[in-house]
Image 1: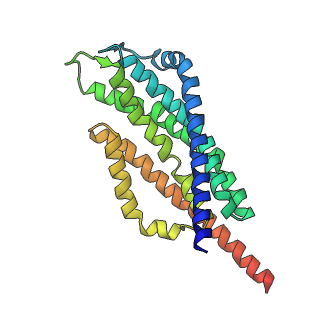
Image 2: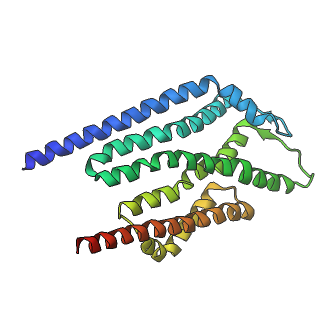
Image 3: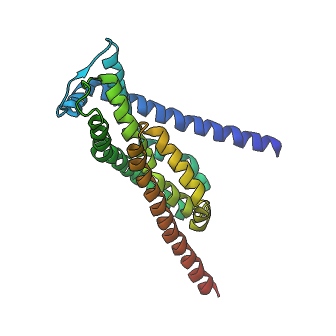
Length: 246
């Protein structure tokens, strides 16, 4: 019996290793492919800037190119990573659970793109314009390429992952791991964690913290509402099956 448990554990670890390797290989391929066209992507991002970006060293532009290529590669790899995760856990799922989990794979990718778009097109310009307005003509605007893109990534990339919160909560609710009432009980702790996250990922100014915190709290509340909808539907299905069996 003990040998069977060890054998099963080894098989699971080998399967997990296989899925991780496949995901990393796909990420590397996307990274290389993106790096080939990264200069075109860079030109699209900076073409409408009202100021010139400066370089402080010859390696800065390579670092910026690597940042851009990494973000694009992560976005492209998310569906593959989600599919590999599904392949790893699906033997332990029922047929219904397999159908439910497979539906979340495209949603992960879509919400990641929506999160980055929200950060880039809405939040980033507001925060950047606000910070620039603080100079009030007293300072000469001088942005280095590396600092500008690092700042932009801090305002965009985290939202790609945070916008996936509703899908993750829906997924866990569908599997019966969590329920909306438990989420409501831990609301104040969740709020505290989200506020800390917003402070950590934004520049040290009050406006940025507020502009990031509010969407995160709204995401949490929408996740609770969606979880309640899924949970109540499952409860109704259980009740109907119970009456049918009677």
